[in-house]
Amino acid sequence: MRKLSPVSRKLLTSVHIAFSGILLGCTVAFIVMDIAALATDDPKLLEACYRIMHLLSHTSLRASAIGAIVSGVLLSVLTPWGLLRFRWIVAKEILSLLTIVPGLFGIYAWSLRGLQRVADEGMGALNAPAFQTNGRMLSIGLLLQLLSILAMYMLSSFKPWGPVSSGGSKNKSTKRMPNSLLR
Image 1 (cartoon, rainbow, N blue to C red):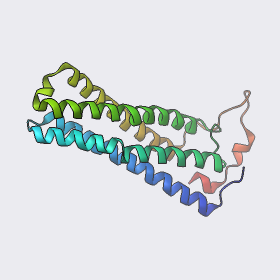
Image 2 (cartoon, rainbow, N blue to C red):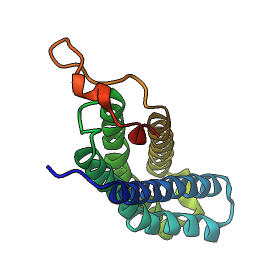
Image 3 (cartoon, rainbow, N blue to C red):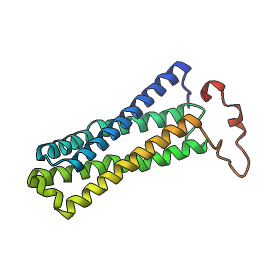
Image 4 (cartoon, one colour):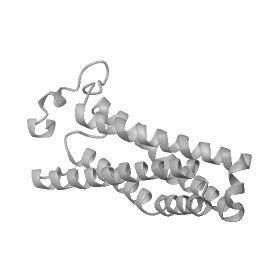
């Protein structure tokens, strides 16, 4: 497969960083709204928090998650890093799956369920066990998503662990990784 030129690699890396930053920003915004929804006694604010969370869950969150994954896979495939050559990349791929699947489907469903209950019952929804369980699932999902995203940032920055070994020996081609890719 053809590899990217240095300019193309930098552009694709910039796109990946932008999508990842939007994903982080959406997650933080979700956490702020989740906390506001948990702490409020204003039914309009409660409903507004869930409306915004639901809107973000099927727009910005979904687009940024898909953009980050697609650009990350392209960076792996089209550069010497590869999809399975380094342990830190494999760890990021696993974290991506753990972040994206619950993020795309769980957060959407939990925010929709919360919105429906709040729209129907107002502040009374706060006392319903199903609403409380849904709220806990949303909070746990958001926290796990935030921790996974931060872990992926750390892995990208520090690039720990080195190459994946094949058959007990180190992959010799990884020893000549261009210095420009290590920055």
